[in-house]
Length: 566
Ligand code: FEO
Ligand code: CA
Ligand code: CA
Ligand code: CA
Image 1 (tube, helix red, strand yellow):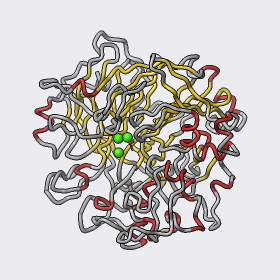
Image 2: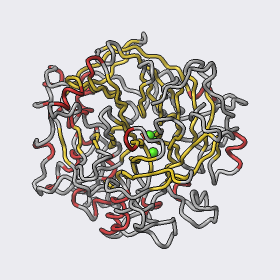
Image 3: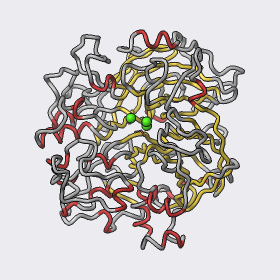
Image 4: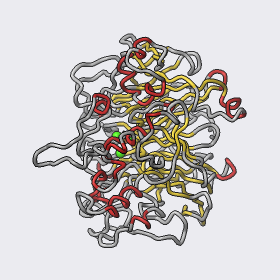
């Protein structure tokens, strides 16, 4: 990425005022020096000329059409420039985390297998060729554009691949990725999509809500991962046996999810690969950097109240591993963080060689399948919902701790109890990302921006991206104070100053951040605008009170053509 000349003041734009951002929550607000355009809303044809859905309440896509369209729930994403350097053309990988039945189907529960297929095809991710034509971005035809959804053939790699933990007596093909939240990207040009709340798509088809009984009961490990009889209410288990926890032929289908999935954006025929060495948790995202000896290192949050921070370090230099036909993400060490009160911390290796873990597990494959349980045994430090991670140019790692309303006592890395509004933790990893110790501090506490008259007000930091100049982009997901919508802010990490650059529409969340190599075009997303309610907003359609609001990408440029955030 282009390195700009350091300037005394990194933030040279006019902040979006609170008053401006709440006047019309039906459309977004942006800093006056900036402009935005809408790209690839839910229902956009993946290939130009394909079936299109424009938000008409009575003409929802069929499942077959949805499989050829951009999905719903736009979240983490990354831009892969054509020829590695183009600022006007490339592949955009966009996660489709989720769409509630009410938004996607227009009803609370599916009534047929077709409804479930539509829901499944709207989840996953899009890989879509985009190009700036006549000063406007639009999708263009490409053999590498594709949808990857819940029924797309995928494969597992690494220590758990081929083991009993992934086998079903139904012998069904391994398919799909779901609840793709945040993301990562590798030095070798691939996209990483992270499976977060996968548990919520499973349920017990025998469960009777009136008597509150069913044939399935969770075991301890299933409880640790949050499986329940009704899940999040998607109802897939009623029409698809893969998601039925009570079906003995599919007992390990649930273990096939909860991984980080590698996708080649430049090869539409590649089978997505679930990298099991990175562990199975509710993966928020992964920030990949290169550490000592050229090792690939990934920092990963497990987004749940009181869950943990993880790090993966590849076994050897990523280039040499790839030259030998090995994936740097298949062999290496997985660690979980233990934070100490004095601002230090330790990376505890999650390995079957540790007696605490060997007392409960038989193989490393079993350990990785139940990563959370192994991390519990090691005494990892419970955090306030670790969401996105990003590595700053100085090597420090920022972690968004989005909130934790249930925290009753402060602890290392968690300065507030309760913590309804979140904070951002900064970590310095010793030995160039490959060591087993770190130091940490808390540079940003959202609550400190809540005083009357403070224009920087924000809560619930979630999406993060550190640019090469020292700016930190902060995106929010949660109830904002002072009637604000969710927003994106930019911090100058040298001075600590924060300014609001963008605010979204009613009931949305701002998430996902990607950038062109010249950093003059940024892509972000509005997720679940209006929570699907056309009376709250019709965005991105013109305000009509009827059109269903659709998740979409927002392309941001500076009116004077400058670097985004400047
Ligand atoms: Fe999908 Fe934790 O956000
Ligand atoms: Ca998130
Ligand atoms: Ca969130
Ligand atoms: Ca979300």
